[in-house]
Length: 314
Image (cartoon, rainbow, N blue to C red; front, side):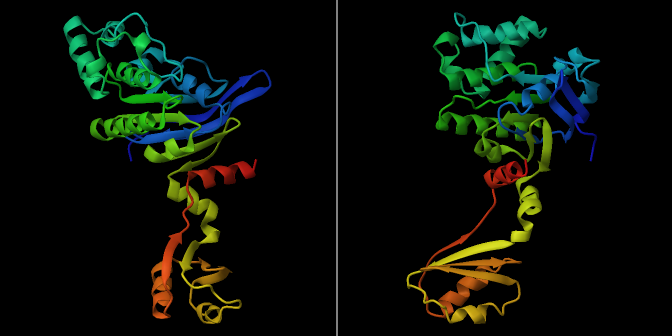
């Protein structure tokens, strides 16, 4: 694998005796969507500011797109698009005028600036509203315009700090879908900071769980789930139409199965804990024995369970 496009080594930031970021190590590779997940005050924004060279670390180093952020902040800013959690536009200017202003700040000529501005407006779905003053825009529309502003300089990396804050559920879904398609189609690397677990889980290839300035874990959902819950194995629940007797005569027979470790009966529902996936075999067993199977559910450990498990250890 090539060198990571974002490389953080032993990064720390102290304010007096308070350590906002504590010896952070993190690699983000080209083209992936990485979710930096943690509660407010965890140190996510401070980390982002150090990536951009906007604040100096107390220790360690950050390299983005091959440049050391502290020593070459301007070079980093040319390669990176940043959307903060609080966006600011000139409310009396139209969306297109705001984008043209940003294009000029990025050194684009009028013709090239207009071509890119119109293309970005179309990309984020604001063509019909490009001539409206941004003061009339909803929060969701401003987030889309903010993304267009980030993209106009054609960055290699985009960093989004709490991008779904204050957007309605429909707007969140559309915005995240847009981020994912941009990353996949254009090979853009995305670092997304958020405290919304579900939003992160929807689009991120990998996540890092960030609490009290420390990165407690990183990986994809399956990797983190197996690391935390692997000892619990596979948990399958089968619900049938008939009330099951206590004790259940089939209990002893099933416990002879290889990989079946525990059976719990709750009325019409039986929960099986197994060291391997026996779901299909269990369904066949119930049907063969004449039970009317109403539902089958295999427990999956999502980001919510993973997040809570790490908090329990704090």
